[in-house]
Image 1 (cartoon, rainbow, N blue to C red):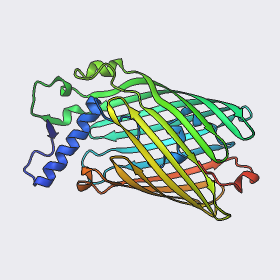
Image 2 (image 1 turned 45 degrees about the vertical axis):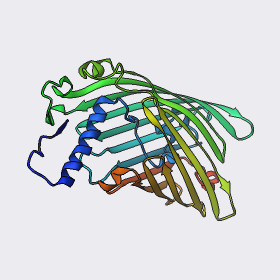
Image 3 (image 1 turned 90 degrees about the horizontal axis):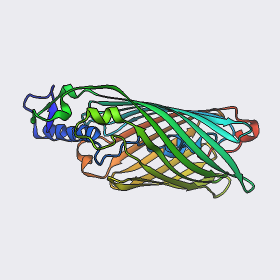
Image 4 (image 1 turned 180 degrees about the horizontal axis):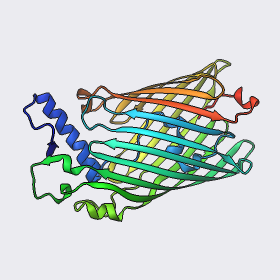
Length: 323
């Protein structure tokens, strides 16, 4: 075990517990034996490109979303995420193109990823489309391991820093949607060219980055002229970690104001709001309150989102964006 080099003076029991928890977080990010590696956000239902490349071009207009997430506020070394997603249709809505940029920080580690997304869309029925999506990205991974102080001086895992180790990533997804429903299956990192990173971490498994399977679905029930109801779910599975399920319920009021709540198994309850400011601009906020033992050591997680929809025709403006 180890602690941060800057925290070697005596501290209270609570401070020591916080440091040990932070150390566990960072150690997990280095070893990746059982940790969830893909980005986690609560407002996934409005940022489908993050989890599924086939989501690209699923709206007949271009869209851009910026998001910041501060997880487990008050806990040293807790994750922080910055995200940008851009996508839109091409070739008469038969294809979709997208781009994502993310910067994920946890403890002494940093992961910056840039990815291009492509989707080929096939019409199904009167209003539905089935899309096949591909993702190609480059991740730059860094870890300031030299800042750590550890008790086992012979542990080769922490002997040297890792600086901008380049990792090529490729992903795949399927996504079906119509005006009121969506269903998707994806593996955002189907394979990763992480040979250099694996070789630099002597105790790492054969592959540093592992596959995560996502299944997400939702449906909108139009209750009356003022209210719409949207239940949705996201199932996340990684072979070396327990499955995780997000269950959400959102209410849309007068086609402009979303209010929702969710539950993430074994982790947190979530509250969220989104407001359609005008025909172009959307803003959103989510708060996660931990239900696990971590709730005693942090102030929850905060997530803010800003979305811009470009090129929406007047007839589309009258219809709300459900997902």
